Image (cartoon, rainbow, N blue to C red):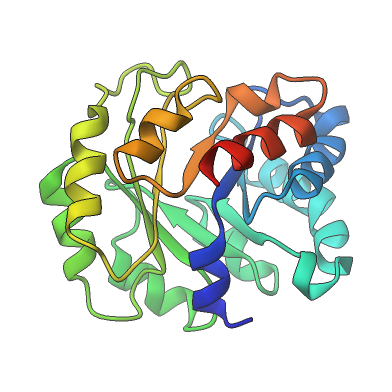
Length: 218
């Protein structure tokens, strides 16, 4: 399966977030996300320093690298380009205030996945207008209020509907407060792919929660 088609078929994007997952649960939760069917797993450690982030990524990297290629999700680092390039095949996700997309792509090279957060029509338009090959996907949100990013004002389903109506060439993922209880609303608005953090991480059986989310999206 090609890089692009694998990304396009990824419907669930999991985030290993230190705000919800302890060090001792780091690898078990990663394995659960993969078992449940996550097409992308991001390592997000906002409050940790560079050596701590490296240790967290190292913890899952070997397991990820040993997975059969067809069973291996994309592994992404949040907003740490120096760390991403240290590990073969690891991609990067950036926000609006992080490294600009063209600069990030230049540092990453052509083969790694690069994603970008957007929070408005203007930002989504700008993402879709980037030169081909700059980013591989973009995220739209926060759709609903989320404790993960309490300072962000929800954009609601209107932005999801608008982006879906543009039929973007790039896959887009809906993020922010998405749970199994409201995922059907996101799907009805045109969001075929979702990121969910607390709803699946806080479950004892994360793999089951991910598979339930995928069943809703299907």
